[in-house]
Length: 287
Image (tube, rainbow, N blue to C red; front, side):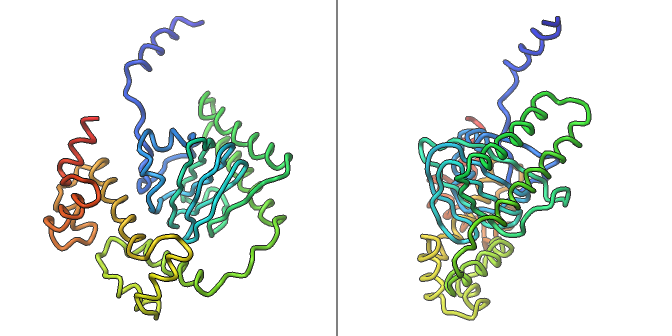
């Protein structure tokens, strides 16, 4: 062992643990994280409905749970590949035994990827081994930080994309999409870009040319949540992210989320987080 090794170990022991990857922040390079490492003890980062500025490919190796992809809720198990493009709604509910890894890919065109959320259940051992081998290569590059690492990461990520798209082509065609599901997907697209503007639910229904009651009904059928609950989860996720990961004044956070006043935002936080915004920020930073 080199003389520098003990010094490096000492630095690692005293350095703070890495922060979770903020969903809305630009991603400078490809990352690979375990599902546990992706949240760093904050399950809401995955479990609450939100959008990300980067693409994410989840590869599960053990356990069962539920995922909400672009408005449609479904179960997942071991050896499932779940891809969510940047800007699409996601919520990932982890069961107690779920294990896997997440590949985070910047949304800068360096890797060709599907433009819609995808969910593959890989039963073939060869396909499973191919995914695992590419992910292992990505993790090795990140761990060892060898010369030309960025180029190697891009190459491995492209191979991962090829494997995903091949498996999509070979998979059985999905069942025809029902009219109610098409409405929910359109609602999710609008919600992803407008949820911070403070629109009432009637505004969304009007954009879809349906009644608020019908919008609530189809969302509950497809997503297991009402349209209002989906909007609330999006707002909660973004609010907590801004309170924890930024130094924006509370009134600016409220404005950025479409609240008419800081007092209204305070009531929202007390209802959903059990504390005022300043307390949420203070408690999180104390931990």
